[in-house]
Structures are given as structure tokens and as C-alpha cells.
Length: 198
Image (cartoon, rainbow, N blue to C red; front, side, top):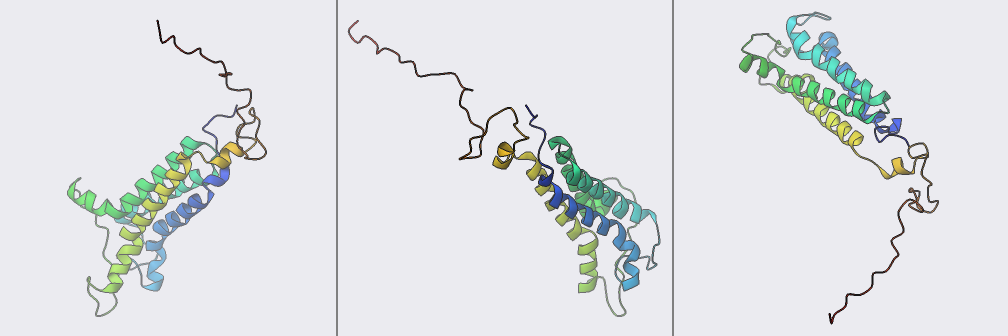
């Protein structure tokens, strides 16, 4: 019998590909964003600093690896681990800077939004940069990671009907589900009624 940990590969492909794309965006957007005057300071293309390592590259790598695991695996535990790793990376996109400053009491500057002339940090452009590069990206990644965990944790009827999933059990053609004929003990014996008088 096929172990319950094996599932069809198609189960995690869509979520895995989404996580891969989100991980690539999260890791690379700050580096090529200055081409379009979009991103966080320093306003130099492909400039590396410690803030970009901790707040973009590391969580993006977690999301990317989680997406790869989800996209290629047929093992339920590996798929769940990939979804969890991606969700943790997404959470770090959202709260990494605050967590580092308040909980760890470390000062690792993450930069500030690249502003156009006349804009302030409260402008719509700065808000969109913060959402697309950190907080909003983190929320989307956590959602897709949680969706991945849910997809890998369920046992679908299509899995039961899949011939290679339960190869040892016959499948009923009308329903597509494994047949219980001959697998359960016969319980058709009758029990005599109790003697009411004595």
C-alpha cells in the first residue's frame, strides 16, 4: 500500500510557483528598483547593505526555498515544511524591522522609501513602496504559505481515486472510490432477542 504521506505532485505546483515568484520579487526588487526610482534608500542600483540582507534577502530565500519544496515534492511532510518556511519568511518581510529594533534591541537600518521631489514619508508613493516591498508582500506570502499548508494537509477524494495512491485496493467504477467489498468482516449474524420473562 502506498504511504499516506505521498500525494500527487499537482497539489503544490500553483502555490509553489506563486511563492517562487514572490520570493524573487522580495529579494530582487530593492536592487533593481532604483532604475524606476522605486524602492528604499540607498538610491543606487544593485547596492548591497546589511539592512537588505536581513530584511529582503534572507526572507526572500526562505520564501523561494519553501516555494521550490512545495512545487516539486510528492511528500506531504516536505510540502507542509515548505509552506511553513515560506509563511515564516513572509512574516519576517512584514515585521522584521520592528522585531529587530524592539525585541532584539539591534539597530540595523532598512532604509527609507525613495521619494520624488516634493514628497514626504506620508505620501501615497512612499506607502505603496512600503506595501509592495515589505508589509503587503509579507501578508501575501503568509496567505499563500498558509494556503500551501492547507493544500498539503488535506486528503482529497481525487487522491483516493488515484490508482497509484491505493494500488492494493480495488476501485469501484461508479464512484471512483476504493471498494470495501471483502475488506470488512461479515456482521450479518443475528442476535437472539433477550428473554423478557426470565
